Image 1 (spheres, one colour):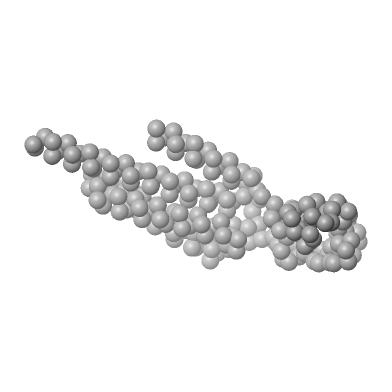
Image 2: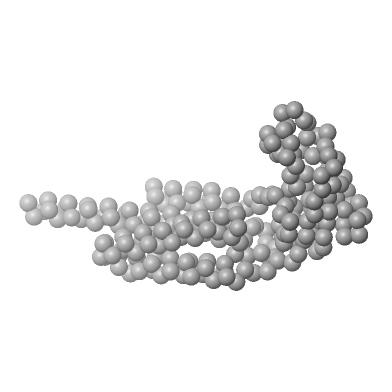
Length: 213
């Protein structure tokens, strides 16, 4: 039963990682973060977003395309910026508001990568120790929970908005989502393994007491 639950969980997490959700365009973005949304604060209950439009211009102020806006939520309209060539772009809303987007080459963030490798390395060491000391249930459970905690912490850090491990690398999935999914899967595995070790230990103790009695 536990293996079936683990399989379903892994499949669910991997399915999520395949979705590279479109996010808001920041002032400066990496080319692999395109497409992204430009957002305009609007009370969409009184103003129809489809009555508004956005014009996008390249470095030379040449009009690239005009796009009708869509409803993002009750207070925002959105349009999609989809230019991945490096450079500076400007956009102008039909309301008169404007802004700019700088598209630059992405790089590996070595500090974030180091943090990820350290946390993940320690989590892997604890996972190995959990297996090595499986016969000593107390130690195995402690190592298992340490591994679970580190993997869960690492996944939450990776999924935070301002932490990216890998940028500028084009893959068929978002690399950071995949790393977070991997950490969550390992956290789930070590948690289940620790619980099973604890149950087996209690069962063995109960059987031992019953046999002695």
